[in-house]
Image 1 (cartoon, rainbow, N blue to C red):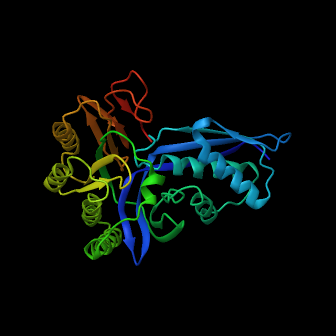
Image 2: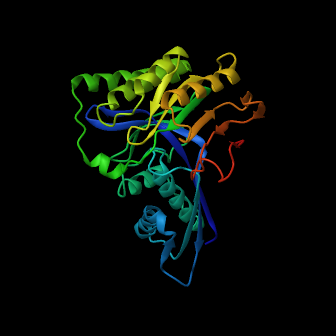
Length: 325
């Protein structure tokens, strides 16, 4: 046994979430910058596993793993995460996955994504973040339905609309999808498949907007119509956390005048919500472009503009946080 390490990315909501062929599913939107990092410190003199108070689900996952496969299990799980909780960004799922990876690493146990999924869904509906790439995932039964690969280069500009959502309670209620909704989900699924086959983000944007629109009847987002119009203007799509509080605009990273567009969209979003204190996010999935904030140019794949200090958004006291992956 040794010091075990594990990590897992978060998400910015989902590209699509609904039901298809009578199965609940989501299509993931992994954000590599958002991470939960776990370290497992084994204690051979103890059979008790511990963790910080706020990470109880990760502790339960670690215990289930050791019990299921007869691993010793004594030790402490330490987790560090920059993923905001209760926002639909897969914070608890990422903690669970990272913790199991760390425990498995400590004992050199060959853990698989299927094992992780099977244990994770015993604790809560899970976001499919055990897969690094974009996948269609049955979040109730923990089964991967299809893998799509990596998204084409994109820009994601979004905001946290405030509050929080208890994912477990939200998923306890039966979703009242009618036949039209089910047809929309099937259409959105095919748009995603086409987008990856053609390496065309436009099709994926259509899918995301379609799914977000259906989700308005379940967990309505304020300003959705305004965001949809803004996305249409820039030939993009609307992305939401279907069981969370974040909403954003998904754009093609190959748009001309990238720096200006980022600032324009940021300004438009702030004008729509009229609240300068809500956390603002900008993710760029391409390391070759320069991105601008104000008069500063940086080579980065992520900017998080964070008005007031928020956990997972930026260090307290800083007005801007630039982080290069």
